[in-house]
Length: 248
Image (cartoon, rainbow, N blue to C red; front, side):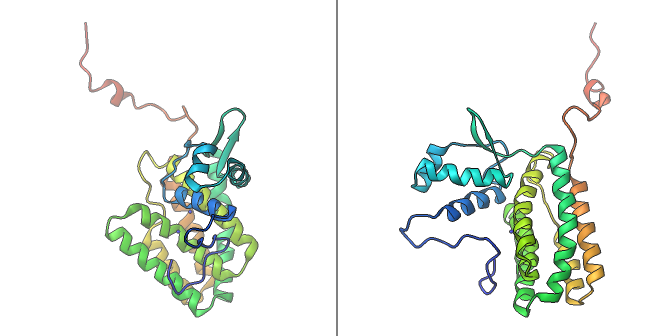
């Protein structure tokens, strides 16, 4: 979907609660989204209201309101008699997420160059440096989180509140797509090299190049995944039958 002390907080991020204070609904929402972005809650995970209420120290009624909001954002699925689960995007939805991101993010990166301050640019560079350090240290989940945060930093500096909110939701949903269609492994998501090239174009104030790089970057991420409807992949007969000796 994702951090420097000097940078402004990403849009819609819930502020931390004071020690011992009860969490607000926005903070509970943020904690659940963070757990999804960190791949601690996988697609299909049941979100029992009573257990979440105990974990957060709040009533089931408040948890239910947070889950309804997450369902509106298509991060959670609500089903009668089954309750809430972390959403599992189907192939069509997965493709739609990337299609919309390719519409939104080239515009955001161009607006970033028009509106971002030196502080925004420094925060973006710092986020990339942290991502590179996390990958070098083998901290894959942290690297994936910072990769999503890189995109959100661009939205923050673009000063477009509506598209910023849209992108925050899309980054969360992208995390679900990566987990669902990442071939059973923790997917790598974005790559630092692409982000480094994009940052260079931003520093050169080359809006056309930056927009094209963003489009290509998102397309390559989608192409890394196996977004296929169940049962449509042709079986590998040689793998199924070739290694077994004949009987009879």
